[in-house]
Image 1 (cartoon, rainbow, N blue to C red):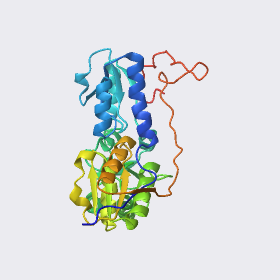
Image 2: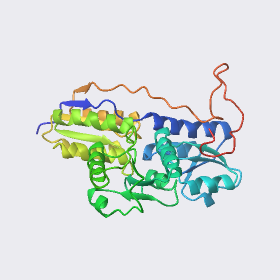
Image 3: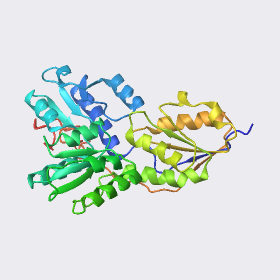
Image 4: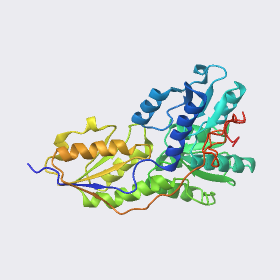
Length: 331
């Protein structure tokens, strides 16, 4: 039986700037204020990352009732609703907002256009925390569509002032198809100047489009809750290449590799490179002798940290003032 000969790595893969920033916010808060630090929802959707931060002193909660008075609270990279922001402020927590700046951009756009009288069609997955956070910026006038069929059913109160926004981690192709259906039904709808789907989601999907035709099998490293990781697996499968998503190397099955010569490997935006390297080691044990990296876009995006967690560049020491207790948007 033929065993895998070559591993081809997608580029880019793994952590994006928003995930890097979110993890760093938690680690710095623990270093500065001491454990425990409370985080509302998983900071990013990756089991390994969450368990690593738990071991360092992070406590992940869904309900603010679980956070003791006077504690330090961090909002996850997916963002939170206005109601959660307001409640956290009212309870007097020291708040750091790890919402990805590209999600915050969508929140700001929604708030600005709502003041101008706009209603919104949001393309996204029901129940995903990012969708709950974005829809929760308003108390009415934002309608979720998950697929083309939903577009026909949506009933905004008016259509003169209507705008479309999307979850940042969708399939680029799916979102384009749903947006086209929205545009067909509401021809005057306002679209974002730049698409809401983030650069990292786009780049990782583009890399899989390049990778899939060159391999016999695609393995995506990512957790089941990770939207962008799921989209990578679906995309490879849609392109006709068998594809599996794994949370850790232990989920690899040797029978997947029977008769396979080339294995494509990528990772979602919240999956650390250490997991990718563990998968490479395991596939090498199955017989692969070569590892090759595809050419791809080099990502140089870096997002600043919130005030109160930045290093003083002159001394290299942590700046010690506590953050202003204004919650999200306070930086």
